[in-house]
Image (cartoon, rainbow, N blue to C red):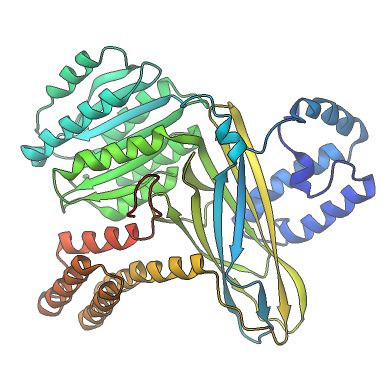
Length: 496
């Protein structure tokens, strides 16, 4: 049976009053653009499945009549969130070589939907906390304080589980409603540091606890905090993350100190739409965990996914989430998990496309965007917004400055990418090139008013020239702090 909550007319790109011929022609156009035989992009394949389903219903008179009758129950449904896409240029010149086009996307709750929001959605939260020997002392003490603070913030409608791990995992607090806060705090306080670091054990146990109360009306999330590298089980951890993503569970990963594998934690987070962060001091643990839980607690919609389907001759080069929690996203496997949409802060994404050479002037389609998510308080599952982007090609376009928001994002993204270039140069055995990139980064950071980070870049440039290696603290600090510059200020906060 077809789900009448899905707007099949919008998916096919026709009005509800469309004739049978209109529906047939719309499908033909979509098939030429997105059928797997014509377009190998994974986002096109994802969207074409919905297009084919919509056509199979709307092209059958009986099925369409039954769908229209059921659809009347959604006639007064508000628009819950919108998808706004701004191109770097609205008119491109006709060129004999490829050219880059950027799209800045904002997914934003509508004012009406936020105003009608009755209450805060309940959280189904699991903390997975490293208690290995290297966490002994101030690190573990601060983690306990942070866990106590989180318990104090939660309500009886929320569910909490706490798992501690070293080379084995212990479920300190099985998933339970947060009613006896004193008992929960006391249980966390007994954690003791011992053993090595095997993240798989803790992560698997944590996801299992989160799954006990898994529900589409809740924010289902696991927060992992570790200070070490796991031993030979990274692929098993990623398999857990992939299954968690399918179930609708997000994972955020936070590394404290210098020894953890940032690429691994990045992969865990991006697989599920979560975030990864660098905590350089024990005293910062409370702030990071508190900020992440507050962000989840402010959720308007959860499990946001974005399917990006460029036309067959357009290349999708990169997707980068700018806000909240800046993170490069994996564009090959679609739909792309985006995570939580907060009521007062948009999800902002920068997409980089390569347009093909063209000598033909006129309008052309570029990419179709499909944002889907669960609106929590309305208990509206898989709400979908679609935007089909077209631009104009002209032989002699008027000079056009990219929008300020795109220029600002690209300027900050350049800082992060310079740091990444320095890392790649060093990996390729080019320490002088790496040092040059770091010096370039320092110059740009000074110009941006980021003096402390600029001095860090200078220090690492000198170190690389001398030792042909980064310091782990310096490398992580430059990576995560240049990335964090991309974030918009949180509500009520004047700084990124």
